[in-house]
Image (cartoon, rainbow, N blue to C red):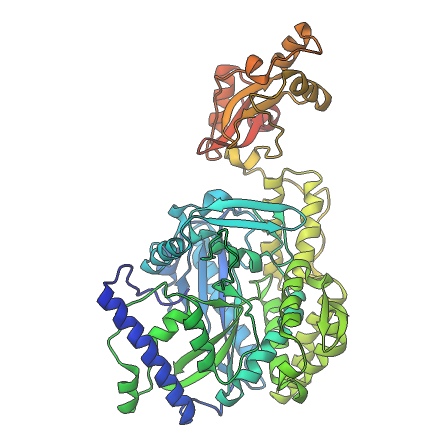
Length: 622
């Protein structure tokens, strides 16, 4: 998530100074580009590994800062939520063994972190979206207490002028409001970096955009969010909407999202991309900066362009242009941000090698992509891939291809040639690209997850299925088998008996009525559907009362078909409700003490579920 040393409240003067540094940084960058000061004789790769922390019950943990302190390694850092950790890998020069080097370091650091985590009853999981994340873990108390995160949250909400909204439609729908950027913390990714020659940056960047659709389509790994089956790569929609500063009005406006694929082919240089971003996106974070970039250049020092990098870090392009200084030498690179974490390190390294091979093997005719494809086709490919993954159909150089055919016929040969040019052995090239080929022919991580979640749901409650799925993913990760070789789960897979909160077992598929509904219709529907408890809600969804089987039978004994009685006439308004965080043990006690057959579940007075005697029988030991 970038630089943590930010100031939440700057005076008008301090903010003006930051803008001054931002403009000076751009001038310094242009000067370095013009005078050939940026490294152009090396190609390096690097990566950032985000991970989820889970408890022994396979739910989100909350001890990232404690683990970070215990690990005591500068490669590790916190992320937005207390259930995430990030590993920053060392850059490696592209050579015959570069991917083996990156893979070895990644495995070593994950092993180190996992050993520490086990001592804290925690496990590391590599997955695009943790299946067991619930609304409960997206409250402010789960935000990592770092100034950057609080400042980002407050500034984005101020720009938007209201709470954030999520509207994602897949096989299921998710429609919910939220009051913080914490929904973004659901996303965990494997971010890949490739250093680019400055004079080739625009051609490389446009090519990176072009291949994004098919690379994403064969690598999707986050189909589930809050128990809903949404996009093949739900992270794409979730990230954009979770920190969207655009606001709705009655006027038709073109507003640029901070998370985007882009809207056009890029031209001229990386400096021009930064200029467009500054022009189109308001500053959301700032800090005091001591050194002037142009003055540093005059002294013979290469500046870090702190203001420019801070602003760039708040614009979340799926292919992000980056400037950095390594070993005292400035460089520019492309950061690929759309690949999900996991499901194994070998899957991640295969995707990494495939992407780098494609980048290095770019055909000559693709040096000028605007002459080859319409940008909107490229962007549409990316959205199709995010929605349907391996099943997407792509526009490619004037023809239509399935992801499978495009990968097998066009892109694997390009990637193979690119890796061969980089000096990798034929054996290593084949080992990585064979995984990509097998995915194209058989299954992607998101397809495996959806198939097995559906199998588990045939005999498990949703929460049980999500926990079993999470446990299975972790177990498979330890085998280091690529996902296409994982075995499928069966309907005989045992349930994990670890649910302890009402939110874990409540039924959210509810039939409700309002107080103004006719009692005759409400009671008939209860009879038809054999529903014993029907919550009564107002127009906002707030709980007002309850209809029970007893109410229904009592009403039907004396009422005529023409009765004008309403639900308000027969319901009870004296209703005891619980919250998702109420323990199952307490809920059982309440039901026994009051002789209730059900308990509505509310959050801030709004009805979100219900539990019945049937739901808690297996937890009642008395």
